[in-house]
Image 1 (cartoon, rainbow, N blue to C red):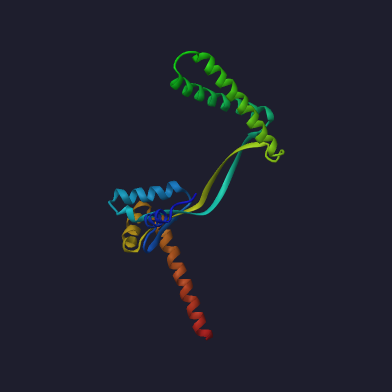
Image 2: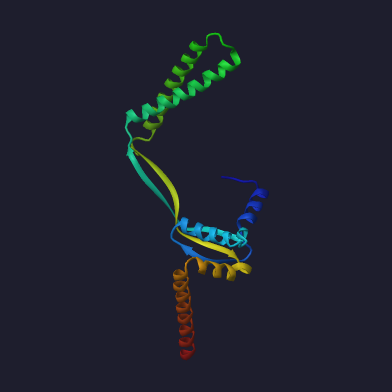
Length: 191
């Protein structure tokens, strides 16, 4: 996807925060969304909040086997729809005379075109992809960020949402701080 330079700059300004601070990290988007919704309910300035998906991965779910018959049937159906559409457009501009013959001929031509086009596309893969699938890009974690000037208030509000999680997070931060302090003291003793 390409954008014009002035549009990219505007988009970057809208998607960015000046000095972002992490509030919490969640395993699912629904949990992150729930946290932001809670902040909104408490009249927090959510226009200064972002949800950022991290550790992106593509997930592809195989939905079935692809056969020549399925490919040709899909091409036939899409060709029929194109033929109906073209026939109706012609009917709008050409009057009502011979409507049925025109509609039938455009449907037949569309069907033939759809079958041939689908068959050529399928044959061009050389059997490399004989299955159908649905793919999606998903994040492994979702981080909620806010502007530095709102971070403390946001953390206090989120502590109300899930006190147990807040206590665990506080313990984790304290343990990390103690570890860093111990490393600093060890370096000073050695040096």
